[in-house]
Figure 1 (cartoon, rainbow, N blue to C red):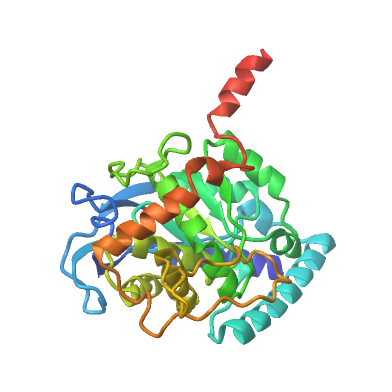
Figure 2 (figure 1 turned 135 degrees about the vertical axis):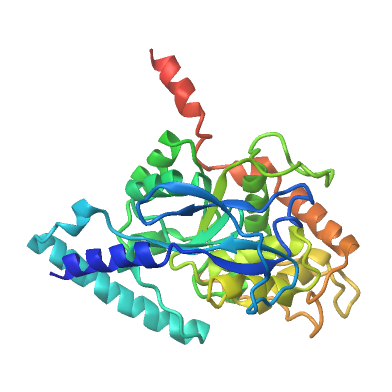
Length: 370
């Protein structure tokens, strides 16, 4: 009964929440030049993909006054086959997931000091932040990959979960990665500790580099060392996720928009994302990461560099707190310093080291096997 109820709720979510909202934004035009046209896909209740453009008047709820385009948040619930499962095994699995969800949300509320909750029973929930950039919940199955490719044209994934997060939710990552390869999706992992501002601070630069390469669509030759514009993004979509899509992944996307976009103030980039997807990433971590990349001098005159990438749960070393106004606003010259520092430390070869091979290699593997 619980499974059937969730299936009904999922169907209602799909029909009720795939509508478009119009809001004002000063991005994607800023992210990849004035030639970009803010066109995007949306999903109809019947499941077919259609093109839409929101070029009408700005919403009265807008926080950033600039060009308008439509956006939406989407629930993709369980499939009909999943909804029909009523066996005792599925009920036991549901009970375990319910207990895991309650514990996770209690931990998140205590650590993040916000009212947001993760609801895994409703399936995928994601928001298009800028055309081609989605932030959402974890991908748990090959079917989730299929839905994102079919509905959104997903071409790359950035997963910010640690191994223990994936194990906690009982997700088998191997078939997910395999399906990504089969569907032509580049899969990248940049793990960060959940609920940790220090960890987000340490990995933001690497995550932002990965997101930039995903949007450029070049994972082999474009290291961006010369700072040149690689042109408009390919007609694909990057799906950035952690577990709930409420902390690590939106934080990384905010950092990417702030450093690689045209937002001059961190508050503007932060408000832009959280207005579209209500969440509570640690803003101070992004500010501190900005200060780190700029190499601000310490009291002894030496430039500060982060001591570690903060992907270690047991690392008790605390990074120095930046001055009150450091990193809250950037000039174009400072942005270029940050980009140069990111590209130098995290070239494409560094990001792709240890990642699954490019999707098109599957075709050549097939040819070799003939």
